[in-house]
Length: 464
Ligand code: PMP
Image (cartoon, rainbow, N blue to C red):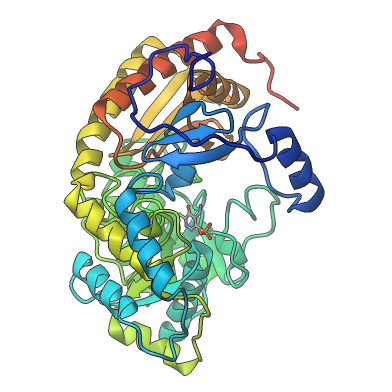
């Protein structure tokens, strides 16, 4: 056993960081305490849950000091790298000076950060509300859309995920229509996603995009009073399996929603801040300009921070209500946000997503040629998805096999996520600082894992 724990099956790129010696409770004790005292709805990955006690840039370390390449980054919560020294330094400096104050008093960090965010947005989107989580931000955006338009109905994509807020439970397809089917209707409606791989419509991605928008028109005609408050979509779905469809989709969907009086909300919680490589914001890849942009996760590189950026006249709608958020806009979170914007620019992280993400996607497409398990490779930049199927013709989802691939990758020191309705899409969303060597390592690990699972590591029957 090396200083990093058991030798990895494949050589991992070098890393100068040495983790501290861990002397806390064992993984078994932590698991027992969690089971006893914490939220019983929490889930863990892996047959034997992994305990992580330290992070450095693209790497995580378990309690024994074993290093893992993090290709999941807590579902892109960490944009610039775990414990990025410059961001930590800025957070620590602010924490030592003033941790919290109410927005009733002035502090420079909030307007400074709001101004910097406005500079990154399309013209006119220059007013930001700060909150603490993506769910809160989505709730707030929908509330504003309803107040501004005077309409109630909201259209979201099937397979979209917008958090766990209470005011908008039916936007939460992952929680509602996915797991516990509840009747659709009411003020939240779900329209078909333009995902070319699993769309009920046939044809090219462009035809599927057009047919999906026609279906949305039908939905508006039949299920709403003819006017809607908002259309909300992720430019690339995160929890829903890294799907997007043709870039023609969003312009058509936005146009339709606007013709019915609705505002267009881009949920950039996973796609924002350069992750898709080609553009800073995911919506730019389709050439649309939303009325509201919701950001969270990567915006704070791990610090609880989320935002809704919109046009002044829409933002004014909320002055009809008192909007007060105890921690929203606090100086520590704002310091983190400011440092994140700096690091993304200084370190060329958007370009890194484009270059390394492109390399990785080409490598995954090569693996697809050799491994029948790989049904589809998709996504942009460092937001990639690999859909695993038992049969490429029938597209039968390979759910247990996906779990087995995750286990195999973990053995080799690579952490991945999974998503999609059937849990059969590998989610690749590393910190945006990964190198080409990391990508090469990940491709060899995946090659080995696909081979092992195709060779019979995974159960042949779907788990009950
Ligand atoms: N929108 C998207 C696209 C998300 O992926 C998530 C979280 N997975 C949310 C909203 C909700 O964010 P939070 O968990 O911070 O409430």
